[in-house]
Length: 280
Ligand SMILES: Cc1ncc(COP(=O)(O)O)c(C=O)c1O
Image (cartoon, rainbow, N blue to C red; front, side, top):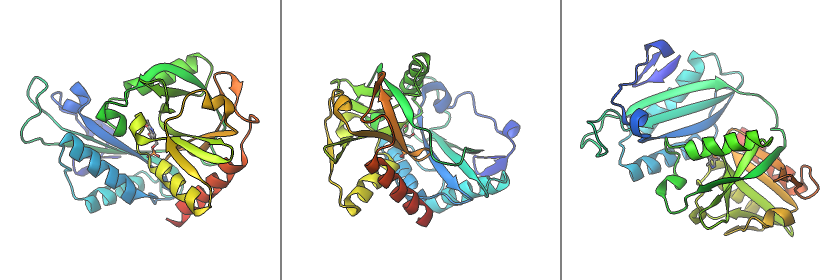
């Protein structure tokens, strides 16, 4: 079952209008959340980001926040996914419009919520390659989860063809930005580093939490412009997202990162993040 325009329906019953601008132009947004046994940790933060991103695009939310939150839980229940780990995806498009690029003056947004069970347990360490595809830090799209994810799709495809698990994307200035669908952290001289939001990265919910936890644990953390050469000198590197949590990166472009294994700060932050998630 999925949630489509206000109702729980079977996938075959959901019909996307052929004039839907999400389908035709990528005119819309999505949120990906992790559900833990019927609960969605940090749901408020996801809804905050959805609201802020929808305001940037000028897409009205079709329902109040409380109704969106209730709908996410309803889909999990309807699919019997309240006793496992699941991915919840909320997709919001501007809805149908006339031919051309100009948005309709009074959009009727399309809302879709789908769920799927995902693997339990900590994510396997990743090996990444530096992608030839660049993240455009000048575009507002680099800071929202828009329906235009083709750069990430192509970067991931390129990474898999090169035998890696994921891709690291630099921005147009050649500095580190993020992975295909995750934020990037490095540890150097014991200091936690992550590209600043102006570098073309998504304000990840997990990224924000890791920065908060680092400060609570007394670790110094810096948001900065970081050259790719920093990967070679890093003691630890890890990726973060709502679905993977904290995932160690053990090799970049074929070279081991640090000792080529899970590092101590990554482990501590990963544990602190899990605790926070279970308490939230
Ligand atoms: C490009 C990009 N960066 C970072 C993230 C991680 O964001 P969050 O922690 O909110 O899941 C994602 C998640 O999909 C992403 O697509």
